[in-house]
Each structure stands twice: as structure tokens, then as C-alpha cells.
Image 1 (cartoon, rainbow, N blue to C red):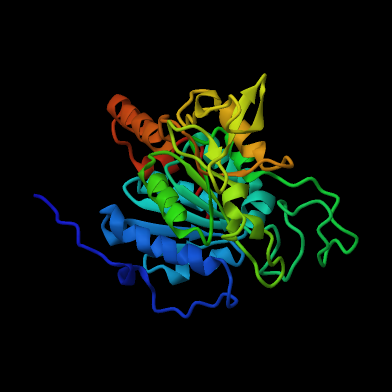
Image 2: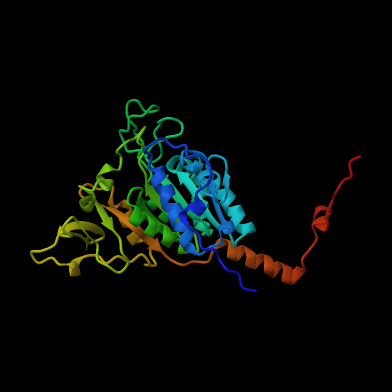
Amino acid sequence: MSTTVSVYTKKDFQSSQEVRWCPGCGDYAVLAAVQSVFPELGIPKERFVVVSGIGCSSRFPYYVDTYGFHSIHGRAPAIATGLKLARPELDVWIATGDGDALSIGGNHTIHMLRRNVGVKVLLFNNRIYGLTKGQYSPTSEPGTKAKSTPMGSIDRPFDPLALALGAGATFVARAVDVHQVQLKDVLRKAAAHRGSAFVEILQNCNIFNDGTWDALSSKETRDDTTLLLEHGKPLVFGKNKNKGIRLRGLDFEVVSLGNGISEADLVVHDAQHPSPAYSFLLARMASRPGFPTPLGVLREIDLPRYEDQVAAQIQAAIARKGRGSLEALLTAGESWTVS
């Protein structure tokens, strides 16, 4: 019997809950993008689940009219993994922040990615703890003066994408909250990926870390400070598309087109390269003076999903030993009756 998927609109994914983020927060832009993309995916609404931990971003499940969990600090990947194993047909998304995912939840995040669980991770990176009122986070820049670092942070920050690549993530991408066209494009590609999809969203906290991404979001500067990645196309950027990225030895360099240098000399983006070394260079590019910040999909490869492999093992065990009995399992071996 065939089933017909309803035609949805953005309104169908807007909940009745009052959105309680600070006015001007970048989370509003991310919410609007997600609510616009979900109706396009052709997935029955009852199959969507949004899981979160703790933080400003973790209010997300309240504001999207889907099933969801507002779980505990840093544990969204563990809960999402369990859900995907129990109900692999569900479309599971995680909304998390740089503190929730990379501090208390760092261990859960890396193991979910290395297993290639089929969930989509939206990591809101504002380089600060917003919900607890402005302490520095694992992605805060050195020298950040916050309530917990009045003399300036001396920590070296995590690069979320480099961390995801090191964990073996099969889909790694970056977007900016206010770049709606590019953000929605990344969300669509993440939704289509079968394994773990890790998306870093550079998001502004206008209360405790306002303007941390201004150079990337401002119309006046973003053409020269960002590099839009397109698979199969050379790495070109700049307001006049007159700059590019060339490989010199084992590293990248920024070059100006002209005077004997053409697009043929530039690196051609290959998100599907079997080695993560190229993607790692892209992830670390923004940490160097004079280099742009890559936006888009850095890496996208296909590997077996964790939940599919677990299901295959279960079916193989059933075929070999039969379906089994929970009662027999509980009473196997030594047991006691307490009266």
C-alpha cells in the first residue's frame, strides 16, 4: 500500500511556544532556516525528531513543531544514538552549542561521529557561554575577557570542524547564521547525507559576544573574508573574484589572479577525496592571517552507518539462535528469589 507524504509549509514546523531568545540573537536565523528546509525534504512530519542538551541553542526542540527531547548537558549525542538504533527510520537532528557539544559533551560528540550514526548535528558556535551569562567557551579566542577569564583566556580554542574530521566524521560543513541562502543549502545537503552530518553554524550572541563573526557576516567584508566551497570548482574568492588558493608543497597559499596566475593554477575543491588531509587544511585555514574562512561542505564521503551494522548483527544472531526470550535471559544462570 502506497503512502502519500503531505505537502508542508514553514508554518507547519512552527510550534505554538513563545520563542524566548534575546532579541537579535543569531539563533532566530538558524530556526527560520530549519523551519524553511524541513518542509522541502519530503519526509512525513511525524518522522522528525530534534534532540538537544543544555544551552541557548538547546531550546530548539520547543520551537520546532516536531517530536523532540530537551535532554541533559552534553548528552544529546548519546540520546540521539539510542533513538536512531531503536527507530532507524526517524530523521534525527541535534541542536547543540560550542559548550554543550565540545566541553561536557565532547566525549559523546566524537564517539557518535566516529561511529557514523545517521544523525544531523547543528553546532551553534558563538564562542561564548550564553545561557550562563558570558563565560568563555572551548571555542573562545585567546585573550577573550569574560566573567570567568577577567584577565583574558589563555586556552587555545577547539576548531570544531578539525575536531569532527579527526573523529572521522563523514560529512563536515560550515555556514553563517545570517547567510540564509548558503545556510539552507548546507542544511539540505546535510539532510541528504546518510551518515553523521556535522554542521558548524557561526552564530552571533549579541549580548555576551556581539560581533565575533562581523567580518564574515558584513556585506562590506564577507566577499574578501569567506571562501564559498563548491565541489569540482576552483577555490576562488574576493569581491572581484580575483583571489584564490593555491597548493604550495604541503600547504595552501593565497594568490592574486593575473600576471601569469589563472584559475588553472588553483586548488579544485574535492569534498569527496578519500583522505581527510585536504579537508583538514580547509578547516584550519581560517586560523591563519590573510586567509578566508571556508563555508560550505568541506568533506562528504559514504561509509556504512552504525545503526545499519547493528541491525545486521541482530538479524544474524536471530537467524543463528532464534528470536529468544527476555524472561529466559533474566532467569539464566544463577538467580535468587527474595521473599
